[in-house]
Amino acid sequence: MKITEEIKISDNGFVFNSKTGDSFNLNPFGLELIKQIAEDKDFESIRNVMLEKYDVDDLTMEKDYYEFYAMLKHHQIIAQDDSLDFK
Amino acid sequence: MSKLKYEKPVISKITAGVPNKFGMPAKQRIISEIDGIPVPKLMEDFGSPVFVISEQTIRDTYAEAKRAFETRYPKVQFAWSYKTNYLDAVCNVFHDEGSWAEVVSGFEFQKALSNGVSGSNIIFNGPEKSEEDLTLAINHNACIHIDHFDELYLLIETTRKLNKKARVAIRVNLDAGIYPIWDRFGFNYENGEAWNAINRIMLAENLEMIGLHTHIGTYIMVASAYAVAATKLSNLYMAIYRKFDHWLKYIDLGGGFASKNTLKGAYMPGSETCPSFDEYAEAISNAIISSEIPHENLPVLFMETGRALVDDAGYLLTTVLANKRSTQGRRTMVIDAGVNLLFTTFWYNLGVFPSKEVSTHVEESTIYGPLCMNIDVIRDAINFPQSKVGDQLVIERVGAYNMTQWMQFITFRPNVVMIDLEGKAHVIRRKENLDSLQSFEVAIKK
Image 1 (cartoon, rainbow over the protein chains, first blue to last red):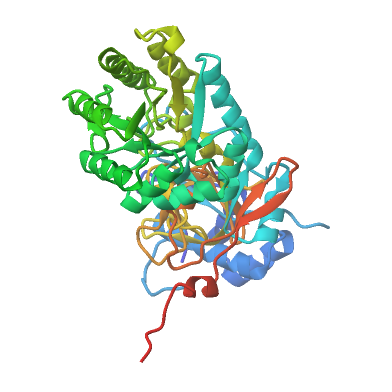
Image 2: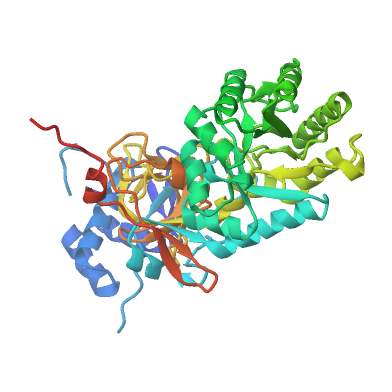
């Protein structure tokens, strides 16, 4: 799944959805994560990059990643094609 | 190369709603220690959750209240409201400061006696006094505040049986110009019921009328209401002198001063809106001094302040158990202290604070307790920084009522710790365990 075309992400963490008119704020780690998701990287490769760079354990990283991912879906930043999709 | 500090990824929707008059706080307040002891140390030593009471804060608050009244009125006596917090260690701090005891049941009466309070320094309020309770009070020469006529006649009957005199006052309910009017306790002033009761008492041979009492309500945010109450009691005080040539010893204005907690639904924080001790003292003292009572016959002013004296001294330390998202995407957090420990969370938006530097990213959140019950909500909406499992939080201003109205439900009640004036922490009530709870249960013999 990709970030939808209508989403614009600025370098300071501001996100605008031109389809819904909603705007969002990201914290620095959220910004870094969403950029990698935008590059269509899968979880494994994102995790490896983040574990290398940040002082975090793999379980915390995984838990927070999926919560963040769920919020992106909730805000329609990532299109959800299949409700059973788990990525 | 050292790794960068991690912070949970967050995305928050920007909503253009009703502008907040106060804006966002510039910096998240943190409570990292209580009276010099770090929060992690307290939780390591005494578990989580744990109530912590600051003796220093109790004494400072008491001194502030006492100064406010004693600089305005010549004869003031505080009586510690047992129901607000009747842990012995707490009561004894107040007694050490000079407080009498104000009790509302036989149980509390016995607790005051066991704390070494002289019976004549106990004010016995409340609508529930059995013959046994009244006998105890008469034998200890307590000040019995009569609540209703049935109690008055039970008291007369009991004094006859004992062939002893009882020292009494009546509780007066009145319209102090505030809503709601508390009229369920005592005798009404406006319809003459109080005056009727006074006349019957003055004619009863075994009753010595020594005072008048009123308790106009709780969390009273208008100091002038006390002035109205004090004026009405002063009128009764003078009426008794005129008719019976009898000077009462005291006027008791009860309790009801607001603490700095913020009531649910309030727009402004309680710390900004609640009257100070000085404002209450000014209203009450002025009303009595400017009444027609001659200055040489001014009564002793009794105050039964509870909440405002002890709320600030109590903290509840708690731990984050989980973070969740509701179906609406709202952040929710589960902590290990529930409404079973925090009765006052039903009235107040209690202050919840991190115990260490946290993320600067705050998000509107709901804080749930650990109970498997839908009502277990500590805060339904609070701007709170991101926290992770195991983070330690501090809930402030929980010294009043929580440690008496708490209930053993689903979990054990935790340790209660008092930090003394030297900064040492002492357990003043042990955490419950299975044995302590089961000791009350009795198996049916077959």
